[in-house]
Length: 365
Image (tube, rainbow, N blue to C red; front, side, top):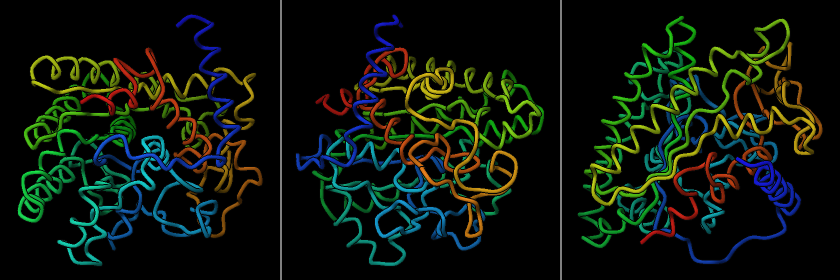
């Protein structure tokens, strides 16, 4: 990308961050509904409904900047990227977690949410592979999330008729998954070239099933610079990124890009936007002179080295100015960083988001 284009992106981001909270859109949503799949980068409280899960964020200081300072199960000090992308798409709020229907009537839940908001299936700690996340005892894998969506399709067809099924093809399917697969395989000292083909093959199976169920618009978020999150940096005496893990993240992106190109040529009507979260993260980390975040190594909430020895919890040390931190906890971005990510997804262009932005994808008929 030319230097002028990079400067333009930075300028837009800075202006955007400067006006946060000054405007709430009352426009009609751009798509009928959002269907969200993935891990803790997209989870809005799924794991709150899994009593045995150890991958939870439904306690302070999580949610300290959420309305009423409420911990909601989001791995953030406030909203996450999915929430803020939903706002960009003119939804008043992002879809609720699928498992929340357990506390209500399933029929009423679907009638109330499917036609106008959608559903969030994402589960913190999960991965593309069913085996990923077992250390957290109970998570909902990507494949299981797709199965849940399949059951929803059957139910809404009964409840709402053919029109409800028809709006699925116009809705936006947002997927953010893969980080936990790389974390676990890298820790097991496997190389990316050996395990990433398995991840991509499994990813393809899940995408094809969603397509068969009616999905046509896919907003895919690849894996970020996960070797630069605080828990990985603290394992290096220098505090630098764990670049081997970042190499695997880039290999994953390249393979995922090839998969989507193949699917778009084979599956009639399939359209996609692919975000290179790695490049977006490095754009921030590699340009510390840009006035976006003052602290890009330490976690805002935690304890010990780089505030990353422990997860964020009630007795953690919490930073004062959370808007100046890139990372909220050992792994996840702050709300401010999520604002930036959502803006980039909605408005971005190659090489950060291709072949089109999430915003342009949503506008397709």
